[in-house]
Image (cartoon, rainbow, N blue to C red; front, side, top):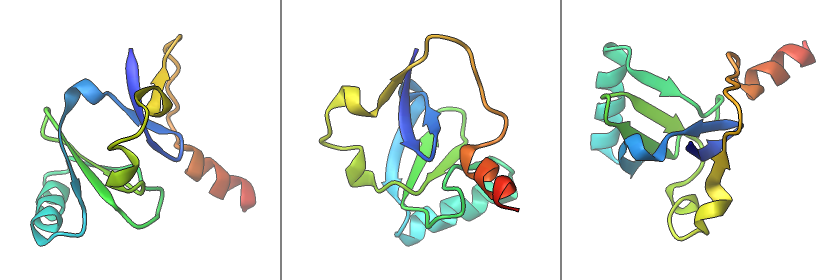
Length: 102
């Protein structure tokens, strides 16, 4: 299974991405707000400024702090993570770091 690294230890399935758009535009902000009302937003930015919005084929919206230019034009293997086992973290690494500091 191929996964696309979207920053801070988070990854998504690139086969399920319908679009990747910049979060700075007004339509993208409206799309995020509408998805928040429907509880279909996954915030993978770990509290950082959202720079890229991924629209998934399931209707979910994924927010990433990595800029869209970080995905386009890069070597394909650099952004992909090959999964050799089905290990899924229930807590993102940025949350773990905050809880350790306390």
